Length: 288
Image 1 (cartoon, rainbow, N blue to C red):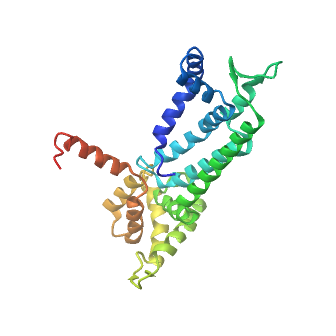
Image 2: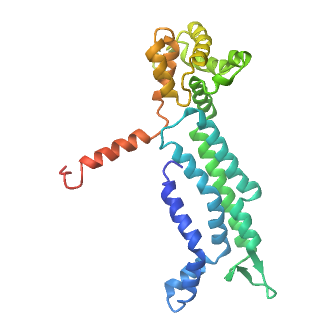
Image 3: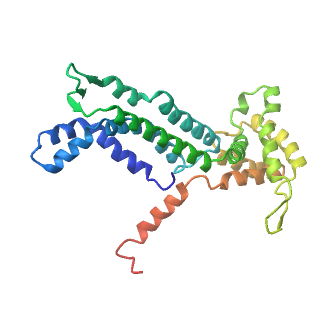
């Protein structure tokens, strides 16, 4: 999945999809050209038409998922974006997507038994229709498997737990809601970073934070952020305030916040680095 240039693929797919009618008309008017006849045959076979429509239902979800990792990423949205992608591409397999339904409704058979999509005759057979369904299901199963492997549930749980450190919405919580907020997620973080670990080679890594102290800090932090009305729209902005005014009060939570802010989730910084490099190291300057 990661080897595919989804943005370029979708751009090409969308171009063909939106110009399909014009392309078919053009090639139909140039039947004296063997290549035009070949393209016309491919474009009007039902399995290729169906493939184009179900890809238009599926590929946008993959491009959106890829896009969030090329921006300044908020850890709180990762799980939602992954689950939404899996849910939406699964719908295409179970009940067809919007465009797949549209082509199914638009494809009509005339009295002589010929099939038409709009004004254009389509080559239809039960075998080709079955092949289109089979290829669609295989693609979606493969994508689902790869997305699940790329984002295992355990990793999602840990990354999602970091989202509590933004303390978003605490200003509007009742005392009871504030008391319970984030406690489960904090335990996940402490279970991972609050105990000694060893590598396969026997190297011992000490705990990053003290779990007991971190729990006390967490209770106090929620009250401080609410009372001081610190900004919670962005993780980095909030913790800039905490570092500036309360660094000595929350040493363990500061370590967790630092980990959250350096998680290598997005490629935005890498992309910017290459862009900056290309501005200075142009083709004319590249003598290596």
